[in-house]
Image 1 (spheres, rainbow, N blue to C red):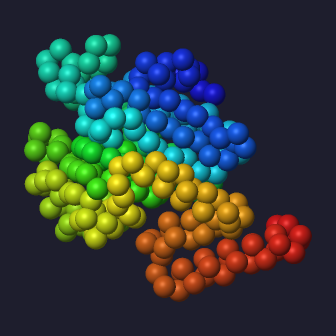
Image 2 (cartoon, rainbow, N blue to C red):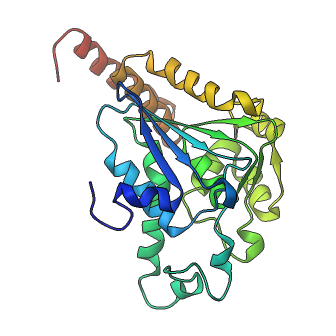
Length: 267
């Protein structure tokens, strides 16, 4: 486990985060657990999320991302937008000073990047508000189930900023550049029905069924052999960057790897 800030599990609860592993080690559940703050995010939470990703045992095949309370995440802690900032953290405007701003933001992004690792399938169960950083955290996952009352919004542009927590690429991949620009540029709300219709969400359910549905989906995915699911995810993730013939070649190569494995021939 990395020894940097946020790497100590004893710090995770203080940052508003809880990690639980299933008895067989195949499913990890990451829960945002500061409902009284609407699961507002902070650099401390991001450091802890990144550390969770680094610390997952190799047995984990699926990760569920849940949140306590009525809101999935209301976004960045509002204190970050005040002159005082979040106690103990660098202010947003301080990032413009010096040359380390890029490195600092890259560190924040690590909390949002590991969810799409090829050896994992990640599922976000999103209820209520998912705003800004909350929207981007939901976008970090492979799949999203939402409650009927979900409300997504990307408010960074309205604040004179841009979404910078690794959310723009998956948003464009899901809904296309024109729709992504309209959502980010206006900062408007996207509800459950629209989220399903445009591909942001896989399904919308009653709030009291959301977490169970996420667990059921993980179970259905894990019914497939691990290596076959890994290969399939890699094929689908890479399809957008390949032309038709390149994708066919990738399919052939992946299938031959699977056949060799099933035949006991190894690499």
